[in-house]
Length: 313
Image (tube, rainbow, N blue to C red; front, side):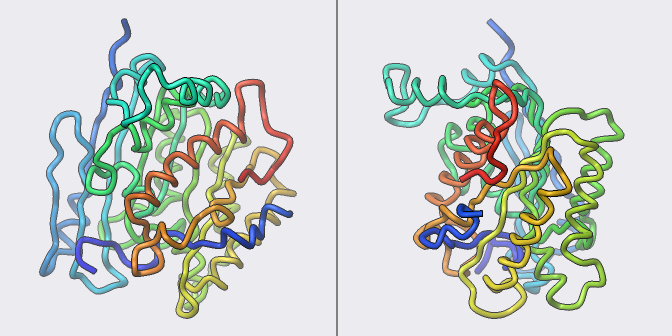
């Protein structure tokens, strides 16, 4: 499918089974960096690079490169106060100031996480893309602002894993290490693993738990919300069975990391939210995913402290 990333970075639906559920201020500043090295390395028929404009989020998309090399990269930094964040984005239809239900949701779901670092793959890049979410109020930054996040960093790259990297790409671990060395302190949201379990399935010597440990080492005990994975595929490296192995490994890691919470996206994702590739999401799925991640952060690390439940649905 053109203008998409390869099947290793998106989500699966396990919804009905619910497998894990049982176990006056300046507006937000948006700075965008497009992965130019990736764009130049992965050009091919149908490859597109969307240049960033002031106040926009740029995406580099490569549609006709070989499946294992397709990538889209977006790195954004949002910094501003809560009121600035709320006012910087137009409201969705039905979500105006007079909507009592919306106001009640915002007052009920508030996080203690004021600064957030979000690292993900293409299923996160789509959450900041106007191609999939034309309404800015549905995009990830606005959803985080809704629950009280004041400063947000997002780095999302198609095909990303924690260990491996495509040409010109930075893997998830090195993104996190760089941000840590630059002085970031706050909460981490990790939407990684779909590609990692596929890489392990095809023979990587770095196992699933070692990958989780590597990312958790960067957090140094700071709050971490990890979004689990899902696909609709019955075979191949990104098969649902492999994604389940990843999710089970995340659950096992809870015993070692009291700062870790898991967002059980796999329990709530619906088949109708997926694109035909069985991995990536359509606009409805992207809107639901962005809201679920932000609301999940507020449930995992609420204003009053940390949630007792370790798996958030």
